[in-house]
Image (cartoon, rainbow over all chains, first blue to last red; front, top):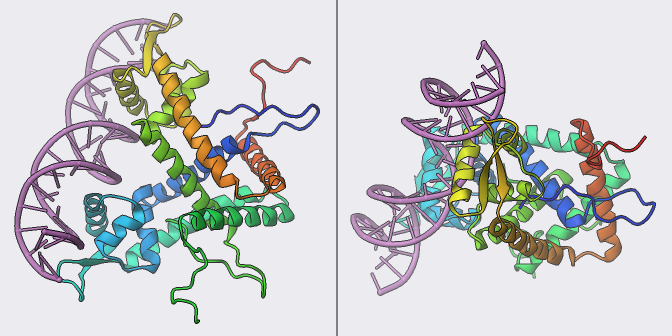
Length: 167
Length: 167
DNA sequence: TATTGTTATACTCTATAACTATA
DNA sequence: TATAGTTATAGAGTATAACAATA
């Protein structure tokens, strides 16, 4: 639907400002574009990069991967197939369930996703350099608040520890 | 590379806060997810929705469309083909150049993209409802500032009028 | 029977290269 | 020659449905 690039009605005399909904949509396109370009620098698509990304701190089954990525399990089969063919991930049999396989990032996969993440972070940081330090702090607070609230809406505690809190 | 869902090191005693780069990446995924779901409600993909979106206030040639969407012209041919088959856009011959065709949104296409945009705006607005009004205003200002600066970096004036400003 | 994962199939999206028709 | 657009082709990404192996 891409965001309309028109300015919202501004109060008389105010500097023009984009509507927040459109602004967030545009910003998301900009950021996803940065990610896409930097991932492409390493011959990675967005879905492939997401796959490697979620594997940075997990070793899930195909089924769990499907839930994490919100994809059908058959889509995950293909995604993992292509990444495995490139040596970025490995399928290892699950010790607990003979039907299941665990998917693990290889050293090459980890290096690749870290490199892409680094380039991406550089781009975003450069863009953020346009803001004063105190504005960046304010933005960080607001974004954080938004994400926490949104996650809470779907029953997720963004700051939950891996082990249930003692007591 | 999807954003790691870990909290950044927080000052002692501060409420934990996500790193801004990761936070913006996560927020972008959330927002693009909303767009994707709402577009899918209307049987639209993200690329198809972007196509209809840019056509809301333009009647470009295929070539211009390729530049606007940052796609190869052959990709645009396919995108427009599928949208035209559904009656969402129409190809009209360019009066100025017999090689060129102009792409125009049909009434059906306009209705569809407006509906999707409306649903999307509702989702984003609901999420923003977690912020206090003054925080929303602050966020709008920051996002706006970021987009304007980023656009300026590539030589674009987000607030340029269609006609060169008088004087 | 239910679940895990793969396969078969179909469609969208994307790019590269070769082509047609204007300019 | 150069530009506008399409076609041919190849590959990634996605989902649905049917299947095999295990629980």
